[in-house]
Image 1 (cartoon, helix red, strand yellow):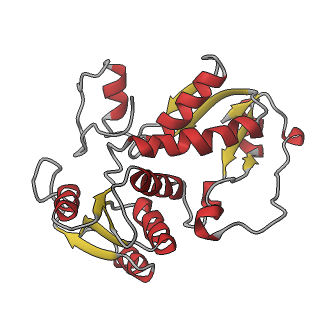
Image 2 (cartoon, rainbow, N blue to C red):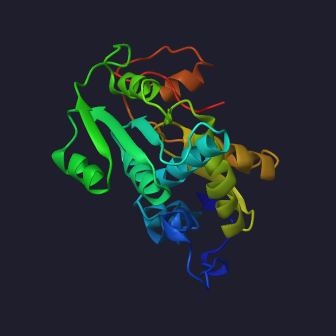
Length: 251
């Protein structure tokens, strides 16, 4: 993030009371003033310290958001099962959330993932199913297996992080307002990388609304990813050098 607000104007607000469990500890992360980048660019550059979430990443917000959304819609009842296909931090976030809220957590992931990641998820109480790493188009893809498992399990929900708008909504409701308040609304731009696109979509929408379109929103897209090509072509996928597909919560 780059802002016209000087570092001296930013103060972290500390809570004076304990939060309620894991859920209460998610969010309200500080901004860190990045001196080196700020000096090099001549701008005030900040990083949002999402590693301070209890599960160690920004994915805690989405995990909590999709579970609460399923509860509110009546899709998930007490003692139910939460299922997701993930090879990343979403699984860690969901394992924490499910343990805190009394749900069974089932994770499907490619069997190319490290044993350490599998062990961590199991330590957090998740049931992990490593499956062959095949393309998304293949019915045996880990995402499809997660979906099918949920369909065949009573009182279960597939959180479907890539297409679930509750993912982006979590950032619209929490991450973005925090950033806006922490910079006192003096924010020129926001940039992040994407997996599902939830952070970019939710934060970007909020900042655009609050700034009346003045705050610019940027996607940092690595070589081989299809998102920059997809967006720059107006929705026509013209480059596909990697094995990914265009999906996510943009919109």
